[in-house]
Structures are given as structure tokens and as C-alpha cells.
Image (cartoon, rainbow, N blue to C red):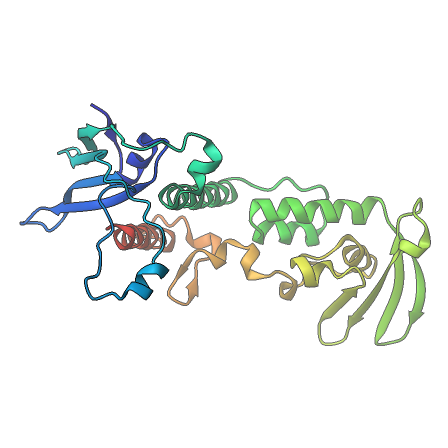
Length: 295
């Protein structure tokens, strides 16, 4: 008989028809589910309300149930896996055989959405592991790039690196205006018409401030090549912290309460590290979400 790791994966065993949860049997001692029954979405018939008027009855949606007897029963084994111990695949109606129509069924749509979310979470965890266990490959020895590599996730640093490489190798500028408080430049590539160049304004009073007419930072949350070019020309020593948005760093996901876990705290040989505590809490949260979604 077929065995599944989780009840949800039993959905993939049922092709061509919609699924409805019919019953869940729980262990009386532990109150944990040990048996689940899924039926075809055309099982049974709509109940008629005896008190409903003939006018309201006309407004009822078309009854699509056909009394179908198709059924799947799975039972939890001692090793935690779910065994198909009863399966009736006899339907009294035509099946939805095309993939497009199957995906439109509510049960299949919900399942594939949950699989997509799980895949996204796994991808983020892989990205975090890569960031924590490898060093970014820098294209220069400048501290602006070095600080970006230290704080950004690896994927975001790769995006930053493209902008930085363009800034130090492929751009030039014209000075539009300069005062003691601010400087304005037109920045672009030599082989591009100047009407497509961008206007960059640089200020350095209380703190470094740079704005560009391309609005990449305002739109995507990462400094553009034009701004980085001007910062390098103005001898800014490192990437200002206020231009590193927390959502592009590991700190935004690795938190204990309101406190963020720094990269230096993730490997602590003395006792339990903050990173370990975060992992425990993360797994506990996933269990709560799974329990909430269970019938």
C-alpha cells in the first residue's frame, strides 16, 4: 500500500477530482489525529432545508454532488508515516483530467499553494545558510563593497555588486553645481546619450545623503550605480548604515523577541547561542502553523 510522509501529500495521490476532508479520528489518550478520511467533492447530496421557501430554493446554487463513493483512508503508523489502508477509486461521474482544470479545484489549489510556500521557505533557509557559511566574493578592495558584503544576504549582495561594478568601471560625470553644502552631478555612460544620464545630488553635513533621479533606492531599497559612483568620487569610506535596509539583511529574519541576532552571535562555543535559540523558536512556530492548518 502507498505510504506518505504527511496527510497533505496524500492529495497528490488523488488525480482528476476534487477532494474534501470527511473525517478525522483522534487518539482518545493523546488527542492526536491517527486516521483521516478524504472523499470526492461530489460525495453525498446537498441537504434540503425544510423551512426554506420556494423562492429561496430557486436561488440555491446548482447541486453538483452526485453521491460519489470514492474515498481514501490513511492511518498514522508508529514511525509517523501515513499508510493508505483503504482506497475506493470508483466514481459515478466524469473526472477532470486536464491539469489546468485540476489546478482550479479548491482542494488542489490550496495544496499546491502550501507546497509553493514551503519551497519558498526552504529557498530562504538555503540562502541564509549560504550567507552564514561563506564569504562574499568582492570585486574591489573598497570598504563600501566590503560593508555591503558583511551585512546583506548573499542574493542581495549579488544585486548590490552589479551596481557597484558598474559604478567603478563604466560611469563618468559632469558637474552641474557645487556649494559648501551640496554637489549636483549628471552621471552616465560615455557611450550613452547624455539625455539619458541621471542627476545625483550629494550632501555630507550631519551624515552622508545621496539622491538619484533614477529612484532605484526609493523603489528597490538598494543604492544605484549612479549614487555609488558619486559616493566613491566624494571619498566616502564605507557604506552608510542608514542605506542598508534591515529587510535585506539576515537580522530581519533572525530575531529573538525585539532583539536581532548579529552574525557574530550565530556560532557560540559557550553554551547555547542566540542562533540556536532562534532555530528552536522557528521550528516551534512551524509546528504551530501546521497544527493550525490541520483539520
